Amino acid sequence: MVTLTRKQVGSSWKINTAALEQALTLLEAKGLAIAEVIHDDNTQVDSILHQHNIVSQKDLWHKCKNVMSKFKELLQEKRRSPNDSTVECAETIAQVAVFSIAQLKDYCRDNGLQQTGSKLQLVQRMSVHLKLPEAGANTEIQRQRPLKYPELAAHDLAYKLKSWIYTCAKNAAVRGDTTPQLLTLDIHNAANHWAGDHSTCRILPGVRKCVTENWSAGQMCKYPEGGETHKAVADFLKKYITEIKMKCYVRARENFISETFHSVINKFATKRIHFDTSHTARLACAAMDWNENIRREVWAVYHRASNDTAVRHRAKTNKALMDKTSVWKTALANRVFI
Image (cartoon, rainbow, N blue to C red; front, side, top):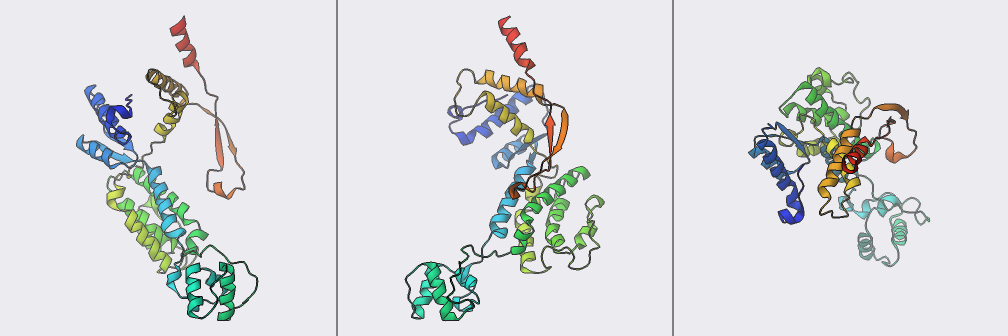
């Protein structure tokens, strides 16, 4: 186990690379051949592993999470820009409310209308001038602009994309693919699959062959084929899912075990306190506790019922493990005090 502090390496952002180099040196000195290292997306770590001729694989969960967040940011939650049209083209009060206060005041100034008042007053004033339906009515305006691609939010395709990438990577690992071409093609196929085009599904290996390839045109489609939404999703996948980026995910590796071990370390050596003399001993205690309880048996599986929409996509079953034991504490106490 390698432990470093910021004072030893000069700055906190150098700790990861310095610890990796030190760990590789120690392991190679003991004659251990390292074939593969799993890490988060870190280009400096990639460079070090390449120098040691070690296969670099990145955590799949972080990749799926980042792609899902970027998908929401750029597509699913993107708002339509008011500059796409003019105020004169508005046909309802809701369409007028999309524009900013500055744009509404500019229109009022150009048409000789009063420019003072709140946004609601400006919208009502302009609705009367444009002779829109419900003009002058005391209607609450919708402050949130309409979605540019409403189909994506309606079907929650951001989460479905995350599951799609997971499935593609897992199946690539089962097939033993070492090249990212087929994995990239499989992920890019999501855009066509959701549009009802299953031509690519037919050429994929049997383990990923689409079970709905015989759907009729338009059946169970998330959005129209060839439309603006289809093109936006396809362009997004081509930009963020490339063969160069996916070569580190062909084995579908995850480092959740190390993340879990870090949570155990925090119980014995919290990050808020600097342990100068006892840090190594605390890490040893965390390692003994981890080794003793890592393979606890499952004694019950129960279903979780929840109406919370925030957790509707999470697993509906939970596993109850056997209680944790602390035999190592007794053994350590007997060794030290008896």
